Length: 258
Ligand SMILES: C[S@@+](CC[C@H](N)C(=O)[O-])C[C@H]1O[C@@H](n2cnc3c(N)ncnc32)[C@H](O)[C@@H]1O
Image (cartoon, rainbow, N blue to C red; front, side):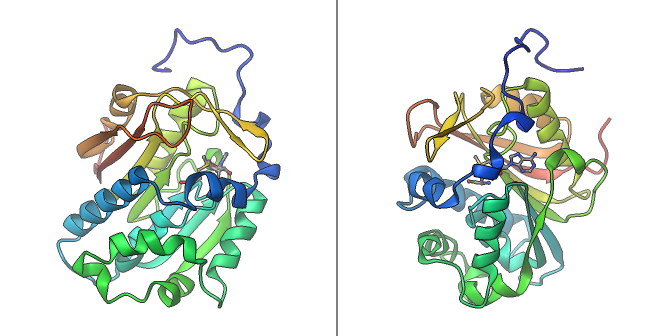
């Protein structure tokens, strides 16, 4: 049953209604990542420390990682780089897939991502990794619809940043997005999931994209069921009007959920 039974369900923009085929990666990067904001740098620091702690200082690369709804954001994959023999970027919008494929090509990813690597490499597990060649070696891009991933429990670590709440206004689709992410992770998998807090939606290149308004309690309520040692960081920074900060959930996937 939905956790949000009282919400209006009419006139909502659902995931399938939004113009994902017109998503403009360069504009999205300009708005969110071209100048690396304090919130994203803090998210990268927190992810780095969480993954480093979870793998207890080893740099063996046994894990297969996934970033769900990767969009044109490389920092989640960069944060998983020392720990993975393979990282899959799952994405639905074709312009974002084209962007990601260019970043994995022989020329290496574009310099905008260096500011995030500079934060990561302050941890010993990252400092000897050559990010461009390793990224090209281990990262692969796949087109997927999040809603088709039910039952794909196959990844040993994972990230999902600004996806479940930033792809729909519909509470049931938000909830399903979070549950699906938790269910693609194997027992014990460390993960990081970021959410725009109380977002009213966002505009990329003149096109409006939907969002579901969620706060820290809403995230805890759904994720608590799946997660050991769940921590939800409530970051106060905003990157634009129309949201109240960012949330970062960190933990490990439980072995069973009752
Ligand atoms: C706000 S962007 C977030 C992108 C990126 N993860 C980031 O951290 O900036 C939302 C992303 O969700 C993707 N998306 C929307 N609907 C999806 C679906 N049904 N399955 C998978 N990805 C989807 C969009 O294409 C877009 O890349």
